[in-house]
Image (cartoon, rainbow, N blue to C red; front, side, top):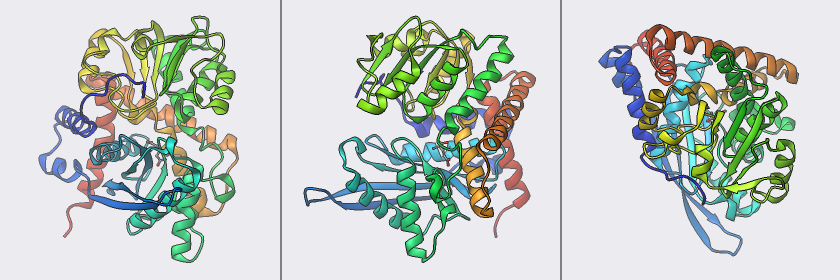
Length: 419
Ligand code: GLU
């Protein structure tokens, strides 16, 4: 796989970011003990009959980090690099993310260590259903609601919804979000992460007195979040000069034709070989001089060894955890403005919340209504984080954590300890 070197453990990063913010806000030690660690961790064996007849054992996880502010919420990832520590980190970030955008959910995440690119649809379906049945005691619309993440999509959610509903004996669409529209999904959910990233970039440009039209953009990762962010920036008149996916990077200093690139990726599955572009390496891509860099792939892609060469003025974290704490410190000293993941990519879970609300009410909204509400949530949250950043003179990531952790801390103090 073509990526920059992965270093470090995502869960160590999540804990370090928590401590930095908790120290900055002088958080009470008892409260820290109560909210820092996952509430519940489940590891499951997922045996699957493969198409050639043999049985392969996959390992799966579901981690519920917090149910302090509401049901646990978070996606399910299918990827060869999934580990329990990665899922714990992603679940932790979901807790602070839901609190930053002030939606009434806690945080969770799930994952299966597998290589979905080399599995058939039938194998994926059998694996998803068996995994669902294994985590069934934990999930439900009132307790823990999965959603798509890396290499899972609305079809995966349809299989989970069906498995859960068949077991319970009646249809329960609210058990997952990011479902197909015909099963109770929400308009605007599929593009929600990218749209949310776009709104926070608009806010950042406004704050920094930068024009988005004509701004140069580099997008690392061209899945759901990366491609939709690129599309919306392109429509707003920005010039997307380079894009990468797990197989290669393409560059055109005059700007890539993003709708055509999305079309090609859908047809052939990769961006490499795009006409009117030249191939570059992942390190060259990160070093490109540009106004906005959008890391939209996996964790730890910008770290101590490569952060100094970054050429961007704004880094908009469409991915979860793309910058290590060491990278944060280097970018801070270079004056780079970072829109942290738990704010930047919170549009996905925000529209998941809208979807869950619509399912609960059996009443569905129009797309424009979803977009307007999402824009309001993202821009209000950006302003809330910016205010802490300016008043306390802390980096944007610490400001976002102070906001999110502060809301969870307030809730846990009000609930007090059981028994
Ligand atoms: N996987 C997305 C995230 O990391 C969305 C989670 C959700 O909608 O529950 O935020």
